Length: 296
Image (cartoon, rainbow, N blue to C red; front, side):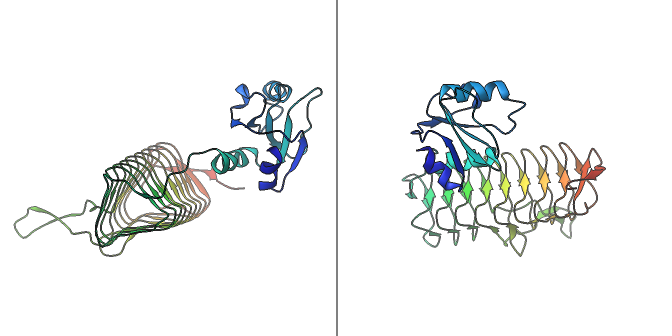
């Protein structure tokens, strides 16, 4: 019911308490479907059409139903965020707890009974999969890796295999430096498809709570990534980089080894960071240069 969704956000329901059948985009929403509008002026025509069709619309505080509307409004501060949370809570499929028949879990690994391990996934020695974590198909979880509670590791990700640390021996030949530090993912983290998070050399590579890492991202050894960070598709984070809380990294951006990206900083699409970035600074380009402040 629409009132149930409104109650989730302690929000006001304006109009009928309709049964909500499914989510839908604003342009396509019909009777009893849930949708949202963030800017009622910009999307006035689509908003009016959905309201007249009988949709349940998550809308900004203070929004009024158009005249003759048969739908209803749920008034919230951030309609897009509320829509995402409502879809996750009421409509998104939930992975069943348990380990798939084709998965291989080492006897010394610990998988919480509420966690999900997908088809053909490998969980190696000493790994820990915490409560309600979802590890999808064809994933490799390396030795000693910790996957925090309510985290999501999408298909074909590799977490905790060796990083690319190369030195020369006495004869001048390349050899691979062992990486035995593993990886620790915090709670509510997300690792995208085909993303790699490499083991630390001695101490673990760390990804903080609520950090979201997109598909096709590479996180090298010894990185320390804070809380609520967003790293988008195809970014490359070199070894021993420190990323503080609330940083946003754009698609195809690269960060050279050993740098620090300060809290609330932003690295733009395709940017190449060759120097550390101060807190709250926006940098773009190759090499990345200051554009301005992120948060005024």
